[in-house]
Length: 401
Ligand code: FEO
Image (cartoon, rainbow, N blue to C red; front, side, top):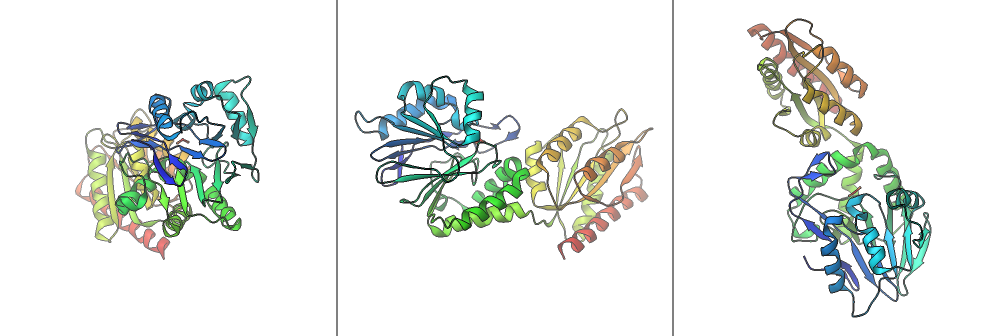
């Protein structure tokens, strides 16, 4: 994709990664992604962020299109050091020889640890710092742990534009550049998936940062994240801020996710009986077998659910490995405000529900009584699972008020 002038003299010069599926090594992105970065042409020319290293050719090509003949890049602004944004930094420093590289205090530390540079012209810009480009100013706001310690936001008051890095992003490779050009429901789904798998543990930071930004009274009419579609106009900027507050508050919906793995289908039958009990009481249910769903897909569904039911047979005095993987992933993302329940079949020792209960309790969930079945469920034990579903539904109803 060629550069797009998003405001007078400000260009999107990003790369569209249509084939990206493995995102950051731990989540799946069915729709690819984009690495958005920007060029501001003023008396001084500033490059905001780079792209993933494999797109170095695209970045050079886009810069050749966007820069005037003989025009150099004076400043680099590095909002975040993760390699999908700073992957071309060393190559770009060598080729374009910037006068200054601006980054946050934690960004400087991360830059040193990533690139082991010796003589780069790095200047630290803590919150409140600003740099003049001539007619425009760049102001910097540290957004620590949103989602890395080095993260910062760059704001240009003259153009009312905020370059927010990962915040407000979505993994969506598109030919369109703005949110108002695509389907809003799909956009929201992908924004939620991104939030659930990347930003979720930092929800308290999101709320604090948005509050601080509101108190700063920054006039913003364009929000440019480093992934996916950008937001233009006051209405869309407000929409995306409100959406992030909603995500960060983690208010659950009338929804339950049953996550299970199974050996000889006993735990699977139990999962379906629990689902039937929940659905009978009007709860929206997702039944997700770990053999058929990636842990990040499951997490996207868990994100707005009120209840999480985990099922596994007992295997070697524990649980099946795909369930252990899911627990490890979910625990790190620290979901809040959930009801938990467990089910499982066993042959002899029967530790499954104990292990699952400990995991859900460790995540702060309020637990409903488990159901455990020896070898194969009977009519009565299937009924017990169905009843467990109804009990969970009642707990959801009480939770949602
Ligand atoms: Fe898009 Fe934190 O990297």
